[in-house]
Image (cartoon, one colour):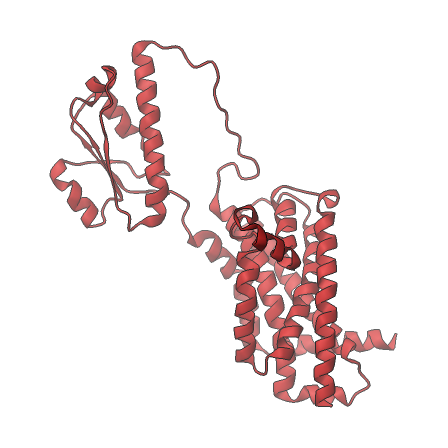
Amino acid sequence: MGSLANILHLGVKEFRSLSRDYAMLALIVWSFTLGVYSTATGLPETLHHAPIAVVDEDRSQLSTRLVGAFQPPYFRPPALIDPATMDRGLDTGRYTFTLDIPPDFQRDVLAGRTPAVQLNVDATQIGQAFSGAGYIQNIVATEVAEFVARHRGDSAPPAGLAVRTAFNPNLTQAWFGAVMEVINQITMLSIILTGAALIREREHGTLEHLLVMPLTAGEIMLAKVWSMAVVVLVAAAFSLVVVVQGWLAVPIGGSLALFLLGAALHLFATTSMGIFLATVARSMPQLGLLTILVLIPLQILSGGTTPRESMPVLVQDLMLAAPTTHFVALAQAILYRGAGLEIVWPQLLAIFGIGSAFFFAAYRRFRSTLSQMA
């Protein structure tokens, strides 16, 4: 009971120290509010209100149909221009796409010939240029095929493809970005806060005060782990409910309580990583540099940015030793697909096992560091 009381009181001390660190408090507030919102909404959708101009040299029923096929929200209403102004519109950045429909286009299509439609793309708008060219190609091909089939009186094809998009019907980028940013912030802040708490003790000279008290290395470490984990867990729950569900109107498919359970196990691992890094670093700038080196591969290679299936097999196997890999899979299964405990229990078990390994490695390193200071 005395050991638990020591851990509790030391944890409360960490809350008090954090309450006086206004820079860290500002980082926590920004990360789980405006940080999540800006990441979710800062990047535009794959194709959104792209400016397009059409040079209609045919003036036929088919060309008019093509012009009317480009509709919001993917494209702005097409601007009808003449060939002389086509290049100038691209050069000045006024249009991202210009479509040139040649003369006698409808006649050649109905005659069975294959007339070429010229599409000019401003590739400096790389995000929209890459996907927009494919959109325009599909729109033109579909409209021409439907026009020819209707003109010839062809019957509808015997079978068609009906696409049903699960979990994100409109493929809204913010739905994915908001949740993944919360996951990334949990990992980042848990490492930073725990490591900074230990560095702060060393810089202020209070770590030596703790050494002369009847406290063990495990009690000091556990106090920092549970207190910083509680701070991040409460902030993450607030962000999911208020920012993600409320502000961004992103639906949460599964149990928030089950996700927080997985987050707590994940924090057990990442806060231990923060302690370990703080024993290696000698100052706050060094801790920041080490954190960057650790966070970048954890966040990029864990499946939150790029699907793990598209990575080399060796990278996939190596990242199985990282808690973020299993936490991202768990979070996506719960928050996106509404998975229950019967589905995500392997990830929970893996996170707990990896967290235990990180904890004991950090404990041995921390105890060794304290013995050198004593």
